[in-house]
Image (cartoon, rainbow, N blue to C red; front, top):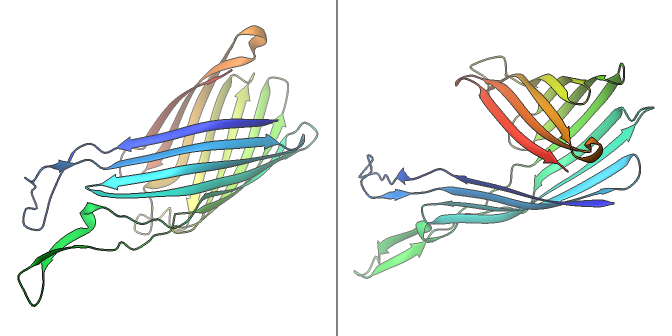
Length: 246
C-alpha cells in the first residue's frame, strides 16, 4: 500500500526599507522578501519491516526584483524489527538537487560606453550555489514495560554538507499512547563553547504531547504538541503544533 502527501511552507518577511550606499537609512520605498517550499510525497510499505518514501519539492525565493527557483528531493528508508517491532532504523537523504542561481531585473546595472555617451543596461550573472544537502542516520529502541507504559531511546547522526556534523540523543516516555514527554540533547563540535559555537542552539531540548482519541473504536486522534529548544542568545525556541489523524 502507498500514501500520498502534500506539504507547503510559505514565509514572508514583511516590508523592509530599501537602503543603498548613498541612502543607508532608506527613503526609496520598501521591498518584501518571500520564500515558498511546496512538495508532494509518496511513501510505500514494501513489507512488514521495510518502508520507503520520496519527497519532491519546488523551491522559490525572491527579494527586491531578484528571484531563484529550483527543485529538491528527499528520500528515506525505515526498517522495523524486533519481537514487538520495537527496533527501528532509518536513513534519509534530504535537500538534494541541481544548483540554483538568482536572476531578474535586480541584477541589471546601467553604464556608459567608453567611447561615447550612449547608456547601456547590463545584466550581471549570479554565481550558482549548491543546496545544503544532509544525510540522516538514526535508530531507536522501545521498552514496553506494560501495556500502558513505554520508554523509547533514540540516537541520530546528521552529516551536513555546509555546516558541522551533529549527533542527537533523546528519550521519550509514553503513557497509554495518550501522554508523551520527551527530552534530548544535540551535540556538535564547539556547542559547549560560546566562542566556537556555530549555531544559536545550545543542545538541550524537551517537549510534551497529548493525543485525544475520538470516533468509532477510537481509531482517530487529535494531538497537541509542545516543544522547546534552548538557545544562546535569545530566550529559547517554543513550538506548538496541532494535528488530526483520521
